[in-house]
Image (tube, rainbow, N blue to C red; front, side, top):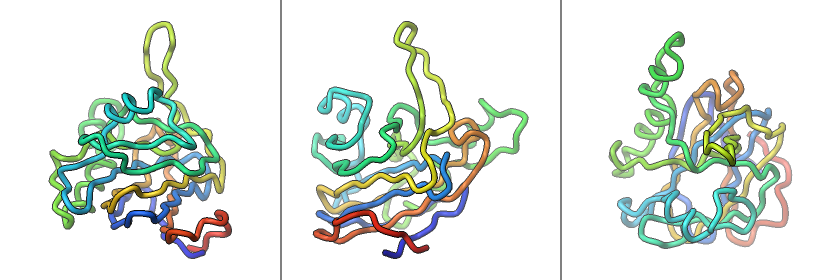
Length: 207
């Protein structure tokens, strides 16, 4: 089945209809993808980490969990997950992120800038961009202190996540730009949209 490749340190936005499936694939391994979702009929309804943690009662989201909106509606259901390690705590990297964490590196607009540009044609303003669901991101939480650590992703080449749309959506998706999140390297992310009923298996992805 054919798919789309997101170039390193870039992002895209597209519609995903209710009942369709979205496959997010790490073709080379060790690469994070920031995912956002908005109600296609009213982009003020947006993916919410707080509502998701509340209703799913876990911060370790994987197969069977749903991602909820700020209006307490399910937006996406995780149907298959070959990694089981994703983050929904940290915001998309931005120019400010690079100035704060990487003062010796060139400033990059990051996932926030890439998402803002990609989502603008759908009527999403920069200030409406929430915390992203960071696919494949490895952020352990110290149980004693609560301290967060950003470690390289555990995803291997070909690992993937499949989600089902529970409403008509606008999706924002990136190949993440931050050094720590991706183990110091930047690689592409592949994705494909699978029609309702076309979910026999992941199969081969041609890009």
